Image (cartoon, rainbow, N blue to C red; front, side, top):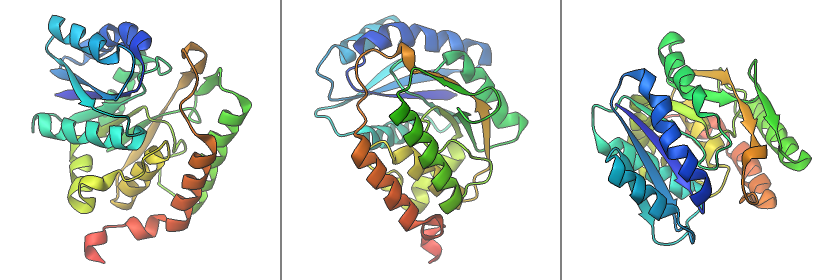
Length: 252
């Protein structure tokens, strides 16, 4: 089974289009699937959109937060819920709920898990065929610099894009991370959570591959929720902590 986790905060408009499209993107796999939307205390109709879709197809699931807790907590809760759904679930896919990630790439990520083989496949802006459309210069520079410095300071073999949230994971590597680090295998609360999780998985020996992503930020409605200053500080924290401190801590 494939579980798609969508962290969402005030994404009512995007989800109206995305949810049926996710189902269409998963159909070619021939596998059973679930789509789990983690609503991080949205003030719009995000929850109502998911509930309406769930009435049409019970494979759509809603996991609500009573109050906004940030991307990191939302991602963590989504992954924990995915692991708890069904032991037969072999793959977990994460992506943004703002319509900036092309859903047609999902089958390529799933295929790459087997073809490489890999434990994590990243939809990467920096892999062949990757590009960005609609990002401000500041956001683009932040992402590129963060990935570059993290590659130098916390190298994970096979990874170039440390910050993109569009990924496919084998359930087994996520379960291993939970066993090693506990429920806080994602401890960062903000956007640095994606880099944190990748570095921790790399420390566990995860095999990582990438497929080119054309990020369509020009399709995003509304303003970015990223706090740039705080995100930069947290990236520096990850660099200081270093990959070596997260390598199998139960053996330390």
